Image (cartoon, rainbow, N blue to C red; front, side, top):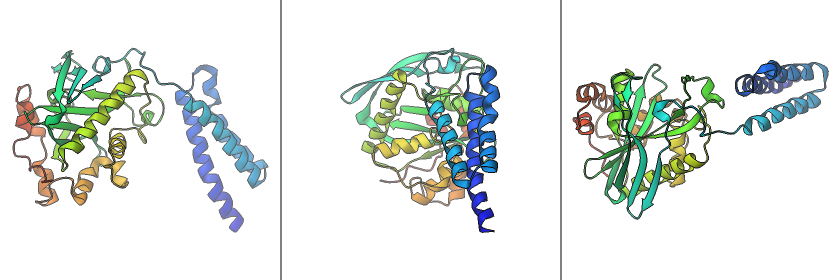
Length: 327
């Protein structure tokens, strides 16, 4: 009985690893005849455990998995592809004291999700006037998964949202499964809120929630500077998006760790549809009212649809929001 349990406990994780290796070869491999080798990792593991001693079977399976990981890790990301128009340009930032000039700020005028007039702008922001951070959640299906966006607020009423997304090529569409492999590069959408927020609520039909976060202006500035440094790096050396390690929310967590403001890990960072509840428990959002009321008042979907193309879009969607928690 103990021997069977040991074999089961050893075989199952190695079979799962082999299945992932097979999927990686099938999805990220060069295609052609190579694609037909995708079954090899699973076959090697099954044959090894059927024909060899346990220790040798484990060694053979781990060695095989290591070879696939070595190959898979060597696949380079690229900035040189035929990109979709909305991610065609990489944003960059130039710092000059308190001022930062950002190039390729996206400010498209949408008529539908796929019909728009392009506008890429250069904007300058005074970092000394940052007065807070706002946090968006967008739901398009499951209540357990959402898209997150961070937006910086300036004392003159300006907002600067940055959305961490996939950079898709012409003809591609997002796939949750493909997001676990090397199919999409990582992309920072630096934009106007009338672009990136209105696109989701008004044209993609997503439900949007906006929370004002607790925090000192100097922390908000440090976080924005860290975002912009990574955006500069991506313009030179692209990296892959990954639905587990480099997605819209885990990357935010990494930025927070960079400025030494990160909190402990929680399962809701992955199942991020409930991350607003995590923020409530940790006191990073307004806790002066019950959570259900906070969530109801933080739903900006109808206000965004009503504001639509108004130049006061950012102000209008914030009407009636619970105030930012005091520092």
